[in-house]
Image: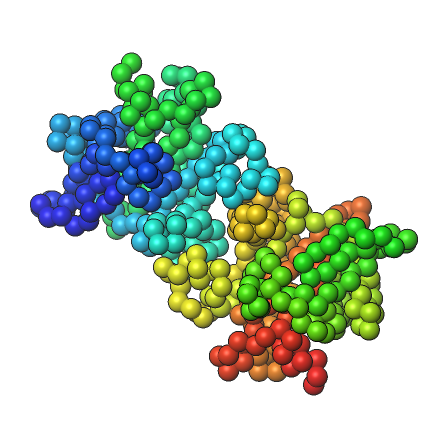
Amino acid sequence: MKLIFTGKTKDVYSLEDGNYLLQFKDDVTGEDGVFDPGANTVGLKIEGAGRAGLRMTKYFFDILQAEGIPTHYIGADIEKATMTVRPAAVFGNGLEVICRYRAVGSFLRRYGMYAKEGQPLDAFVEVTLKDDERQDPPISEDALHMLGILSADEYKVLKALTQQIAGIVKSVLEKKGIDLYDIKFEFGRVGENKEIILIDEISGGNMRAYKDGKYIEPLQLEKLILND
Amino acid sequence: MKLIFTGKTKDVYSLEDGNYLLQFKDDVTGEDGVFDPGANTVGLKIEGAGRAGLRMTKYFFDILQAEGIPTHYIGADIEKATMTVRPAAVFGNGLEVICRYRAVGSFLRRYGMYAKEGQPLDAFVEVTLKDDERQDPPISEDALHMLGILSADEYKVLKALTQQIAGIVKSVLEKKGIDLYDIKFEFGRVGENKEIILIDEISGGNMRAYKDGKYIEPLQLEKLILND
């Protein structure tokens, strides 16, 4: 087992059999001690955040597997806060694909001239580059294609998978009276035919969820989803 | 004649016959006395800049008319620095459509992880909102559609017209040994059938042009183009 990447909220190890092991950490993105899923810095450390994020990820990846949606998930050890996954190559140096149901966060900061806070959006998909130095800039389908990051066909798959997966998460939350405002995913290519699969995690740190118009913190959200 | 809008580089008057009159000013966009076509503030005043911009605009609008490309242009009075145009309604509160042949400016600031300065781009089109407060954010086709700013069909027309017009400007510059790096346009809807036409101007202030790898200032560019 060899450490190959140290991320903000996870470390990645390569395993003897060619798969990867993800070590979930208790670090949470945010600024000045306040959680923000859109932030590029680790804002705070919360005891148990890693294990809670992994439990929620396992919960959703199991649902996706049952729905026939390809992910990198193989297995998880909740106690150790580790997840075994298939090795996937990210697009370029990594993309985030966001699905938005309500206008909040960076969408509102950019398009506030035309959108009101909390206004419904129709599963709007946008892609941002993982680039801390340049504040994760949004990038268009044409630019992704032109810069060789992905093909036009791959963009279509990415967008369709994003809306499909976000829709599943949204309906799970809805059954508990929780509204999904937005959620971000990462995807990668796997195997010889470069199949596009969901990678990374689906935890409270990847989404903004509200109950009765009030924002729910990630750990609280994970409790509401998992402790039925 | 009635003043209906005071812009950064032009004032707009409505005429008795329903058309508009644009008064070109000697103000140039930029910051701290340095010209920047992407800037949102008037950076300097250059004696004769208005008339020079109008002469170049007339020069290109005449070429476009001959090519059958619809514009708002009716006529110009160079001495008075005024242009008579058809009244067009902008998309939302106004868009800028940019066509890029080389990676410079805001493209490079956003996508510098994947693009080198001056790298050739394949007539790449992007749209930004005219919104000084939010620094003219780029906006995707999907977002334009979803926010009701334009339809998917209108986007196709906008993109095709942009590449066609930029191609014409590029080839005019090429004949004088000048390289067009990028250019921005504005479009509007006119008449009952809401035909999409080019509005505003095509002057040195709307483009970045280089000769022998050296950037050419707008007034110098206008001299090079018009004084054959």
